[in-house]
Image (tube, rainbow, N blue to C red; front, top):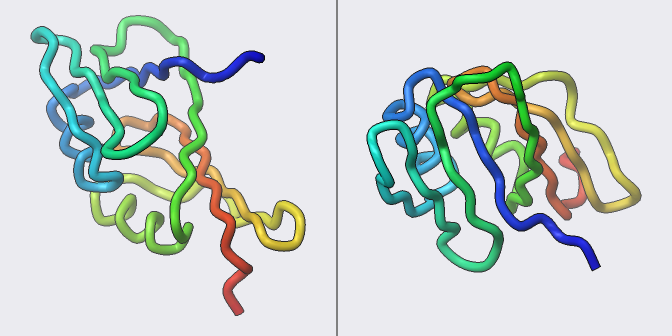
Length: 116
């Protein structure tokens, strides 16, 4: 069965992007070299890296969060923004696209009942 193994996040400013992901998601990071930082989730999940942007490739990852609204607040407080509206997915799940401080698109997903 196929599964996501690794994700890569391009950044114009690797230091700024590293601080963003540490602040928003609490991820552990380790500098690999001047232009690359390895990311390890704090519990289960896949790892990845932040690297100096060199190409036009713009990958998108989806991050499962406890509550989308809380994560959006953290994203906006750290230089990111919401792209579109929170959308229902079935009766109890939701998703939304956001951009990080580098302009990369990220999908957010939660299993929360929609806020009323």
